[in-house]
Structure formats: C-alpha cells, structure tokens
View 1: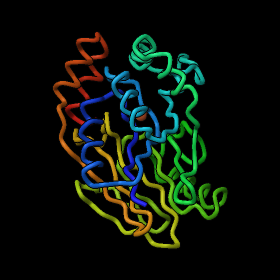
View 2 (view 1 turned 90 degrees about the vertical axis):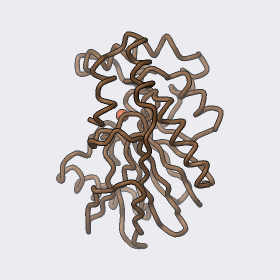
View 3 (view 1 turned 120 degrees about the vertical axis):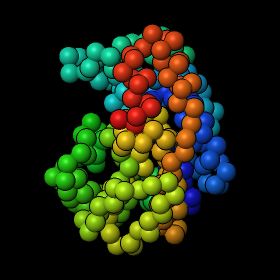
View 4 (view 1 turned 90 degrees about the horizontal axis):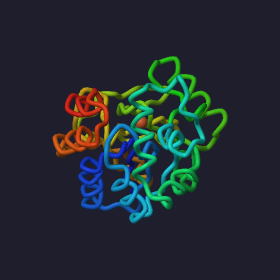
Length: 246
Ligand SMILES: [Fe+2]
C-alpha cells in the first residue's frame, strides 16, 4: 500500500491544498493524518471540508481536543493559542465540530503502522529530547510488539528514528529504506506550521510494501495564509512564524 502521510494541518488551507495535490500526483491508496487539523491559522472550515470530502482518516491532536472540549482550555494553554481555538469554535459547522469531537487519540492502520499525535506513551507528549525519544521507542517495542512503524506529529519537526540511528536532516525528496526488523518512530513534519526552520509545507509518502518513507517539502502561498490570519484578527505572532518556519 502507498500512503500519503500528513499531520498538523493547523487550519492552513493554502499549505494543505499544495500537499494533497502533490500526494494525488504521486498516486497513493490512502491519505492518513496524525491530528491537529485546526488551531493557529484562519481556514478551519476549508481544511475540515477537504478532510471530510476526501474521507481522510485522522486522529485527534491537542488543538482538536481543545476545540471539542475533551481537553479544557486552562491556564497551561498560551493566551494566543486559546484565542484562536475560541475563534475557531465560531467558524466550524456543527457537522465539522462533531467530526473533530469523535476523532480517536490513536489508531492502528491495519497491521501496517500505529498513528499517534504526541508519542506512543501519551497523546500530548512532545518528542523533543533524546531521552524522550528513547523512552518512546522502548514503549513502542514493549507495549506494541509487532508494530514496527509509528507515525506521530505534535513537534512539527521531520525525523526518522530507530534505536540504531536518528535521521533529522531530511531535505525535499529524501527517501529512506526501513529495515524489516527495526522499529521506527517517524514524523513527516507539519503541513500547516513547519518548525524546523523551513517554511515549506511538509508531508510524506510511505510505501508499506517496499518499506520506504519519502519526505517531501513544497513551497506554498505563505503570504495568503498570513493575510487571512491577520484579517481574522488572530495572532500576529502566528502569522509571522509561517514565513520563518519556526
Ligand atoms: Fe500541532
């Protein structure tokens, strides 16, 4: 099977449109999404329209759970993040809100791979240190035996990690061959708010038969996405970070 892998769309329809068009051009059997469909940016309704019309299989991210109320918007959530969630609640249709509210926190794609948002240990855990990465891999190997690939999101940074090696320099078009008997944690990066210093939208192609993962980066209309954020009266910081990829 060939899969289009997307994550952290964050209501950025300009970026998502480019990513999905390229995934269609490459030809896949299915597109799957590791969560955070909304938040930060200003096109939640368009993004959810596309996800629903294409029947893309999604899990929930922390922003999706803020929207549905599964996770409360308490003091731990940044003010500008919470403001976008409150604004988003007024933008989405009732059908879209209930779709987001019913998303699972994780799911197995047949016997091919596990989908999580944060880490295999917890949906809100950020895999940002070597220790957390090692712990997450250990957890995956002990609690999910037989699952040798786990896709995650949340950090918005592309990486392909196993207990043998960690690849985090993954320029456009990088293809990695996965060993048959090695366990991998893979983040293809964020469609709608990249944070690895590159503004290009990030997504991936996974060929489960060949066991190959390809990391893709493409430019999109950042200025249009920024203009919508500002026109909606949302955070200037959120608009600005799109051009730096930070
Ligand atoms: Fe995210």
